[in-house]
Length: 314
Image (cartoon, rainbow, N blue to C red):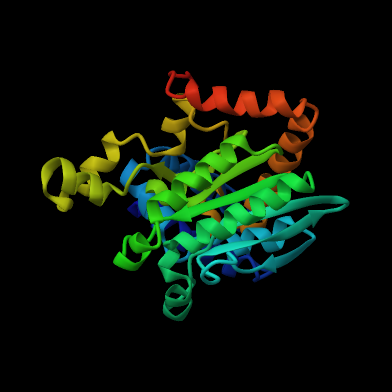
């Protein structure tokens, strides 16, 4: 998605850096000018990304996964397994974590980094037992008064016959209902592709955070185009009218904060930087929300979702 000028400047910058190693040549001024122009151009190019381009970034195989962020944000993470009914679905990663003396419950949708992992993680599409496992640990978090942090990154819940037979729709609805009534702080973070009920199932939070190039919608652009126009080749057009970008959703008060990503690309360019920003937001919101009486917290969460959709200028 780079334009030609950006590519030219990157090549020139690399050449100048190599030349600067020669102490007999002074290219410092030119190097400084090229770096400045490249930075400004990348910033401008980033502003002009279309909804479809952001969707492509969000779906990219190189995009950091939930576990990448969990490993950086939290001091320790212990994964817990199983829904105690059917099996342990590895699409949903659940467990206990801490930052200093503060303990958290983590519920995260995990995509694979390669073909083997994608098969193991069911290509990031949770089965009913994933949501049942999540519900189990939501209730545990409530019992021990631990804040719940969810990481959303899925193209949707698994649509297979077996999943439907095991109550996929009911599991999603029960997960949302549990979160809506949960008597502890809930923070949801959309880190990549947040599509369909598979994403909404763990998206009922007191605060909803989105990464700048993440997307969040009721279904994928391809699915939207197939339903509306009977033509999934119109996915790009669909993405533009679905209002699925972080900027769109912030304007409509669906989310509370946008986490900026590196100016020279997506989150993969500097995972530690993005993770640091997420960590800062988590700690800020937890401190703020834990000051509220628990009944007020739950009521405020309810009203938040009842009032979604009002346009908000930025």
